[in-house]
Image (cartoon, rainbow, N blue to C red; front, side, top):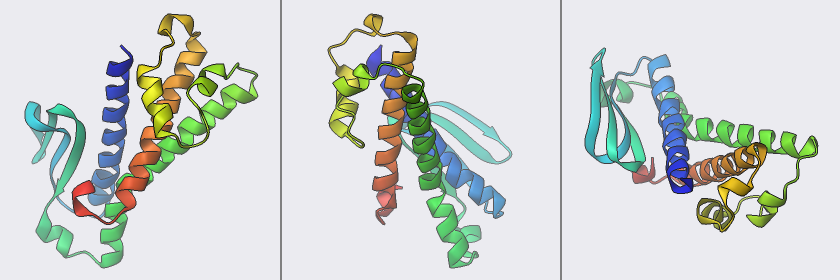
Length: 172
């Protein structure tokens, strides 16, 4: 169950990332040809308004395929905005999840579950532990469970911001 929820968090984070590119492309009148979440063989494919929306077999990655001709007509400043749209989406999701975690803490919630995950800012080890940690989901209160999911959301989106700001085309 924890692994399934972790995969859903990664899919959601990827969707937000690609939605950032999609939204800024549409706002700047760039034709979007395809919007995919995941990679590999397409499981579900819907075409509306000349855009192919796909959910793919492997639940990691995604892309927003833009029309090269309309994209190349843009000024460099606008191209950069579209390219950074995904990072901005992940950054806001990272901030929101961290803010909600801090609200739980400020309201007096016991944060032992986060301490168990080594919550020391950004911790990929903490993310891994939150996916496969030895604590039982049944032993958590609903609020603690939400905090664990928010912690995963925070780490995944922070990592996506870092890795996607690196100027390597294949990462974004």
